[in-house]
Length: 303
Length: 268
Image: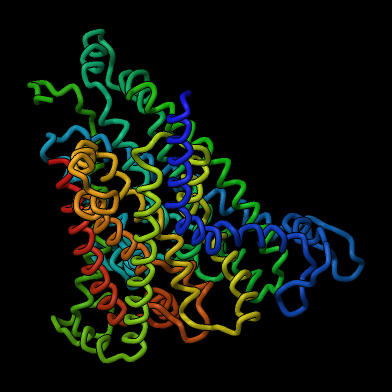
């Protein structure tokens, strides 16, 4: 490398960093930096009225899975915590499955519209995506509540006599999450299907493949990166959901997000809350690593 | 691709499922909007058309202050985020990859990756300490938090615009003895403007919509419109909440339509 080029590289590096500095300062102060404090707090002793005592302790991390008996101090598995983790994982996986089952046909439908129409259909998917999550959850609430749209319609059709109690159950949370996160599944699926070469289908049909065989052996393998991307984009926010379970699940049907909040409120166990936050963060980061890998593979094979 | 007589891309039952999805996506929102015009107190029984809930929301002082606070925070947060994002986009686009660039990307996109509840808890702890040290209780914390998580949303459209830009224009300006600042001010900035406007709008919408981080960071009496609504949902709900939601919905859709029009120009 010549000296001039060397100097140019150095200028580019310096300018790149200088121009990015304001953004980096903001993000360090109010996004990334505080995460380190959470990590520190997870290793401290809990204060009696919330907050922490500045003494090292494993209690926060131990408390994720175990609970100490009040009388004899022995450790036992914390069933209540396990129930909440299991519910979070189960509901998130089910949300992913439902959004895929509904999102795949939708994405396929959009991608096979004439090019001029596609923008309009995509815009229709994007609007709810950018609409306030709270408003959408609230809209679902109005549909599901006992005197809501769903029950009114079902009763007037004579299908049921008494309103179904859906609100404040796991089912309500599931319906709500599928509703609010569906666009996150449709958009990456659409991106994958749109690049799909439809001539492959002709070839498959020419070779006497049935529709099921075409779907299983031609379409699904090729759009797989889109499926992985969409699934992770839905799974990740579902796992950390806070608003939807709070509004639709009521106080009892907590997910991890609400459980974390509880530790900083009535639970008064900040170290446990901090340890739970870190656990959630690690799980999400691992899922996102898979996402990045899937996304890269997608652009390499089809791009 | 031209339509063929026998459409190979057609899969049975996909079309009705897709149309059903669009219906299911819009029906709840549609119901919400319709009942905001209900004359009765119910969000399920229709009693005729009326604007009374809009009037009642308008006259509700709690709603009014929360709305103004939301707009105030969103304005400052999106201004700060857009400025920082524009600079970062200029620093990280259209130049040779430099040392640490990946780190900068990761930092900028970090708010998109970390679950909101985790960031919320982190800020709760961090700001609680700062509040004790400085005694400052104002809206600055919310503006700072919002500005940070709005950065990636402002950054992405600006960067997309920059990447599609013709470098020869700037070279031409430099050939005509424009100083780097003049080139930026009279060549780069005008071309970049739609991207910056689009980024600012996204940032504004994102800030306006935030519930989780605001709920944890706000001090007493600092409700924004979304946290106010979240609080209301614990009580008996009247169509007033529908009216507020509809107003917020309309504002969002207007801003988003502007965003799409701004970013579309690039492709034409």
